[in-house]
Image (cartoon, rainbow, N blue to C red; front, side):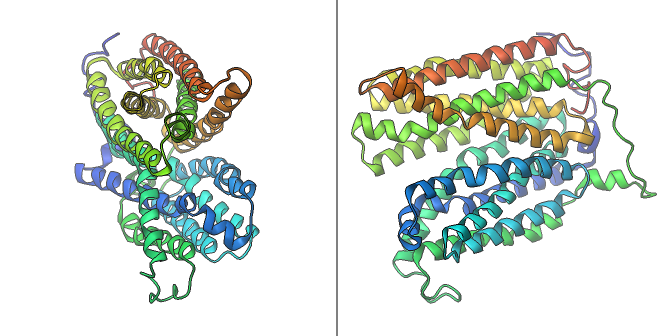
Length: 450
């Protein structure tokens, strides 16, 4: 690996990151973590309330599956692009405030839904807010920290992306149980409400509590852009915009998400179908794997990635992501070993490697995006990886149904799809690392905003 030019990694950070003090940067990171947790609380309660909702509204499993998947996919992709585009032009704190208001309204509509169509409308609004979240939050965290600290900062943000859904579902289950016991029967507005409605309404509220914190943050990029005379910033130069390299990193990220989705979608089913676990045991195994991987992967990857960045520049991070992804190939082969304890350990290590590689790849891709299109670029990355990654569970099902057979068909299919996807992602990242090493203007994060 090539070392960057003397002093390159230690140069003052370009762009908005130079405008944030240490306390301001960490305030932004903390706010984005809490913001993401609040969104998970508003978005995920439906996952543990399927049967009560079906009974109340008289809807089918197919309609429920649409609420859990397709209904949210389109608005998420569209608003990832729109939110990213707007974040390059408007104040991010105001856009985040709008996102909070929109998803809270969606949660309220879901809580009061009297028909499937009304529930769809509420879910669409929740996912509109969710789609705006990632480009806004990621670009803000990226801008707040200098290049040599972004691995750890984005890693900390990815902790909540990885473990937040598990925490939200666990909390939703606890609130649902309390509601069934009548804990909120005397609360204003909840008297007589069915437990699932009370749970949905209560978990949609925390976002509103975030508004003062979000509005109190300083969006230093826009403060600097206005300048003393209030002049609009000059358009950034895109002459050195490494589109091919960014496309390579996005392709790798999409493949990593595809593998992760294929694994997570069927993991609990394997524990139940092949090892005889009941729902509670399978849920505990799933929660243990996702919580540990979601918490440790981004932190470990960010810490090592920043260390490599200081020594080798951006190319060091890409090689780290490549190595972490390659480790997933033998770890996913543990699906072929019918020992639950070993499988749980292997899947935890696989999750750590997957989330570490994904967070590092996002850091690398964002570092190559010019300031003027960083929000839109992040939105495109989010939309592209979401679309490609959604194919993972279906590929496993098709493999299990048409390529393999017998009682081990499902775990073998996960191992097959996961190993092939991980190997391909590692090869793509290796190609990206070699291309980056041949580009002196960007290998140390200096060929565009680092």
